[in-house]
Length: 93
Image 1 (cartoon, rainbow, N blue to C red):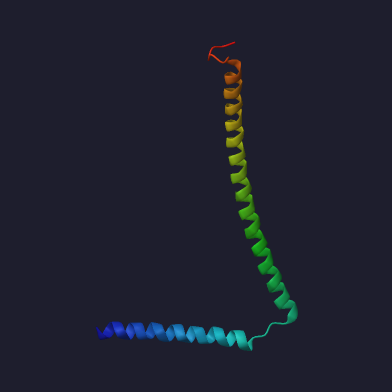
Image 2 (tube, one colour):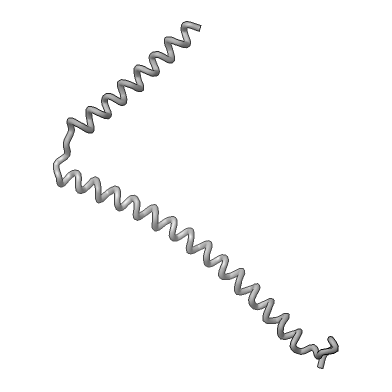
């Protein structure tokens, strides 16, 4: 049992050390304005690329829906044409 607690303690120390290193990097390493702007630009490009892919998928789904609606509309029009050809008695006029 003691062996596991030492392992978990070691993992906890590693996590705290990594968090400290990240905090130190954020506070001590200032990028020059040009490099910072390039990083912001890169993040924007990645975000736009992701949005473009999502929009492409959405458009594909909308096209599939439109095709199904066109088929349904054609079926309804055929049924209406057949019903209008029938007289009030239900027989063809």
